[in-house]
Image (cartoon, helix red, strand yellow):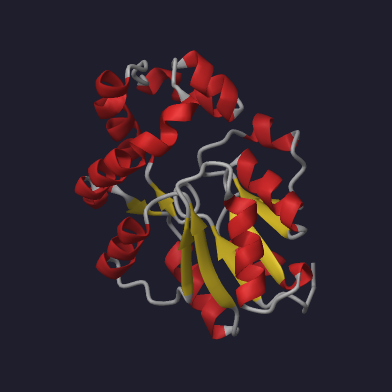
Length: 210
């Protein structure tokens, strides 16, 4: 890109900075009986990665309207399994390199802020300037706009790094560029339709783009 305008890099948490698939599936299955939806089998994960969120919800009989009700339960169980969440290879170096070059770094996530802070502390990651969370699955564009406003940044000064189709949609609504990472939750087949600005295979590629 060679764009010197970028001042801040926003990251999604789950699937982008960390691999939390195992924890997500365990927690999802733990709550399945209580909230009456189907459990997710490991064998189905690849197929599910290729589906939009609404289709996934249908396949698993997952009631999207119950998401706000589940948020606290989900967060509590997630916290209990934080030791199984893994930092993606190469992310530590990437965050360090971005910080050295003077970029502001923030996390915008639908996970719980306490969970994220606990993870960062446990892994001695101290390059993050700000963490913004919302339990709304489709509320990221509002958080991005809030971030732009509170930091007095224009959309062309910020770039977002995420792994899901909804991240790309949120960035389009906010007018910022987006880098999609292929090691996360959504499969490439699903993402290509959304046309992210950049697609990367390893964290090191992010630094080159920024």
